[in-house]
Image 1 (cartoon, rainbow, N blue to C red):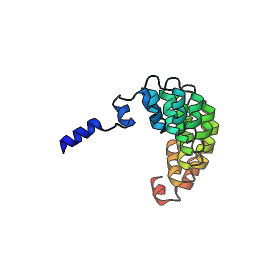
Image 2: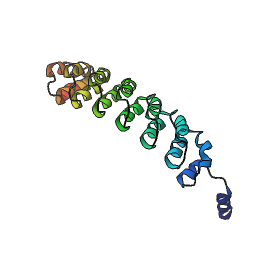
Image 3: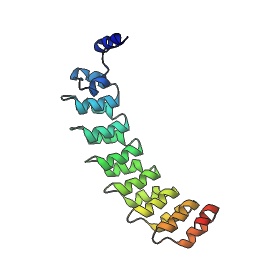
Image 4: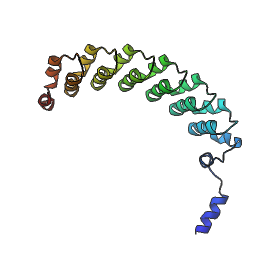
Length: 199
């Protein structure tokens, strides 16, 4: 049995994934690499002489690999990759944060659809529009609290107004945010016995 497995391993054709992992891929494998975004990314990144432009077209069809391509492949077209990455807030955020030459405004537009990523964008991306990010982040009480806590220049009053809609975050807001209106937070926190007790 073992002899048969060894014989098969030596004669069986190797997948492109196998070849890429074991540094066996050649330019002749490019056509196969263009069948999936992940393969196009690794092929362009690891195989000297790969057609960057063609691989990029395929990689950019998937937001994650569009981001990875722009970040890791020398000669990548940032604009093309960004167009692929901004289809999902998480990759738009990472693109603006990690890719030199990213259009922060375009990425921010994609990110602010999600309160959590609007907060992260304001916190981590140089050049983020704090006001625009806050407007979206505070649509969720937790992110309103976090925005007030972590973002310099946050509008504390606007964040508080949203955070107190949930007794949990009303409590944390009163506890952690300098300038919080304790009385207003308490009014909301006491609507839940647990947070009334903690208050």
